[in-house]
Image (cartoon, rainbow over all chains, first blue to last red):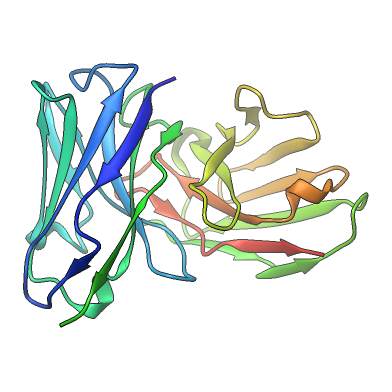
Length: 119
Length: 107
């Protein structure tokens, strides 16, 4: 099973752009579908979007105008950029994979990284 | 988008008791592409059930899933101390993938 590890700044100022990375080990970033999911403190889960290296991306319409997901095959990393951050974007951000295609469940997750939006 | 509504919000039970969590979808879930996850405090969600009723590798048969269309159920036959956690349903049949709001199973 693949291992995923998120990294990035724990604190972001309002209106700035969040940049997170997810390093994949035990598997290739060039296969599978790779997603970002977030969870505000004490709340539920929200799917942000996914990327499939040879196909492209699919974003949640609620965030589509602010999200960019990409991969760096040389580093075997997935990245997330979320622009115009506000306090409502404060959350734990997880990366996860769908091994069996777009219409499949999230079978491996990173541990998550907390991002706080505050001046 | 498909809205998933879980009930109850909180389930207060004792070890050894049976837990039943319901997940209702606002429209039919394509091909019963419905998963259940367990989340313990400070941890990532862990896949329990996929395809509405198939157990993920390593998940004990104490956990079972059932249902189809718009109504799904997660059953924990006998609660162990480590089963007290939050449970989420998730549909992956229609984009955007969506999650239920969660059900907390507490002692």
